[in-house]
Length: 113
Image (cartoon, rainbow, N blue to C red; front, side, top):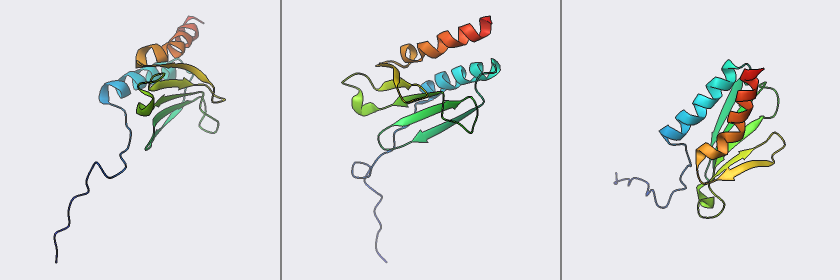
């Protein structure tokens, strides 16, 4: 019986994920949208190229918003993107806060109504 080496992390395809502070910020917004009665479900997809948080009004339809983290775009237009229901880019940037701003504004309108 031989020695089995651990996989080399530099050679294996790594998975992109959210850091704790990023996920806390996203889930805080999600919780406030749920409390406002607007969102009901979410999904998280962690892949090789991107980490995606999708928020749904109803579970049977396409997500209303997708928050994507793509580190490969860090030095270009920014690794964060907010995509709408049809897949259009609503906001893109280097920081998570400004990318979430359109959803924050929508939440304020929902609370005021």
